[in-house]
Image: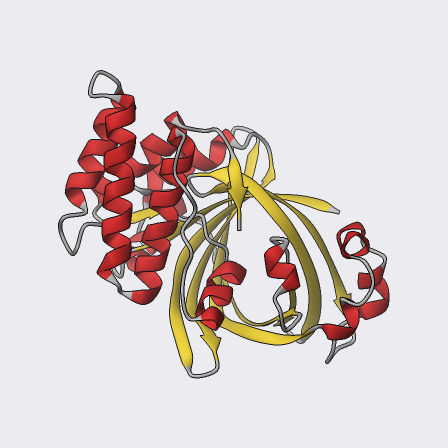
Amino acid sequence: MANEIELKLALAPAGPEALRRHPRLAGLESRTTRLGNTYFDTPDGRLEAERMALRLRHADGRVLQTLKTSGQGSGGLSSRGEWEWEVMGPGLDLARLADLPPMLALGDGVLGRLEPRFATDFARETWWWEHDGNSVEIALDLGEVRSDDRAAPIRELELELKDGDPAALLELAEALAESVPLRPSDTSKAARGGALLAGGWTLPEGGSAPAWLHRAVVALDAHADTGDVVFREAAREAFQRLAEGLGDAREEGRLASHLAAALAQDNWLTTDAGTQLLALSRRLPDAVELG
């Protein structure tokens, strides 16, 4: 099992081109791969209920099977258990899957009910960035999540730590955010596909400061996928609750208040707003359960 540590960032429409022009990527060679992914679950969504994701990925003539477990994190930064291996295809390798601890914990009867549920198809452009002993894979994903006749766009950036200090991910993100309109995202592609399949989103509860931040970020993910202003309003309210709880005397409270005000505008995701949300995430690092 590997422990995947990454920072997931959603981009505004102008984000991809701004990213390619960023000085941190100057002189770095990029590689583009087309990735087709099919996600599997039981008809009643047992894996999703346990915050697990199972997929088959087609890339460069290979088929990779991946199982991911629930993550801990906040403000886009997450740590998850991950098992991945190459398979012959076209179907799942059930024999090896059955021996993995998370699947054993589900008990009998799950493997036989697994079926394709939704798919993602996107181009991944990657750069390898190294600095001060830290190695990070920068991956720009552009494409869509599909379920039957419904689809949602994929326009996100993943910073995955390959070696070094996890703090390097936030430091790199903050540097990119100076000229790239981006924000943290707490929702995996699997969870987005599950919401598309179900035809709706369920937002996490607020409560503590990290929980209000998580609710706001997930609401922004939901708004990006659905275009429903109800979710933007839910994010604005979560930031307001966060600001009220922290107070104007604290920098975190001021940041939350600024973000709530920014969300009154349709085109709210500017470099300023993205930088503020990253700063708030850094100041409220306590982990919550991620989907």
